[in-house]
Image (tube, rainbow, N blue to C red):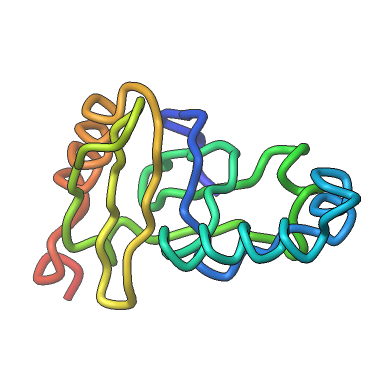
Length: 138
């Protein structure tokens, strides 16, 4: 893997994220069923769960890796790496408290919530502009 160009603490919206049983039990040991239904309701409304971690921009890709607390709080590994050549659009939209970066691909989108979203999105776009065009690769 290439050297990192930029790193940012983010929350990534992960559609299939699932909190571990112990987390929901710890949150509300007396009302586990209520807690699970609230979490599932929020997940459905938001399109997933926000998982905290780090987004790292490399020369040719962007990666998300959950931080230690989120790795222990969620079932599964929600690490993602997307080649910048697969990103067709980098959008910044409103979010409460922080803005949200949407990395749009043919397969869907990865949403990253962070402070300084405009500047981080600009770095991603700058990296994309430096990628060789497909015609240059042939």
